[in-house]
Structure formats: structure tokens, C-alpha cells
Length: 104
Image (cartoon, rainbow, N blue to C red; front, side, top):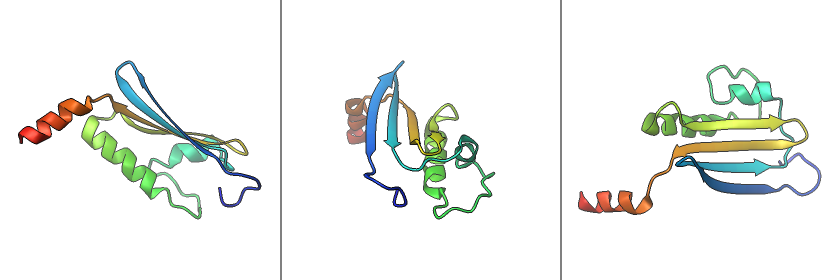
């Protein structure tokens, strides 16, 4: 977003759908081709960028390791329109998890 003209905006939306938690992080930055976005979470990315995307890949892999392959990140992007990173995890009751931790 540092290279765009005008104000950069980041919107964070969280919602529950079919008992799963979704968190969308949406920016109005420069965006990228969807083909490039599709490679950011894999080892297929060969494109030189200022940012390596390793943080996104790391978060994606950790979510999948903990919750399974049905969960993780998805990236939606379009040049000159911005990018959305969608985080998908199972919905977990905070108070149940807290109770389990306290009992250990």
C-alpha cells in the first residue's frame, strides 16, 4: 500500500457461517493478478516481490496443521482494486477452551 496514491484503507470483518469463523482483511491497495495471489500460499511462487509472503504462508500452514486441510487462508485480489485475505477456522467456544486450559 505504500506505493499507491491516496489514502490506504484496511477493513477487518469477522463473521460466523455454518459454525465456522471467517475473518476477512480487506485493503484498497494496488492488488495483484489472481494467478499471482494463488501462488502465495504454495511453494510455486517464483515472482520477485519486495515482500516474500512467508508470513501468510506460515499462518496458513499453522492453521491447517492445527485444524486440518479444510481450513486456512484464501487470497482474493485484482490489480488496482485491492486484496482480501480470508482466514477460515472452525468456530470454537472461547469459554470452553478457557475452561479446558484452566483444568490442566
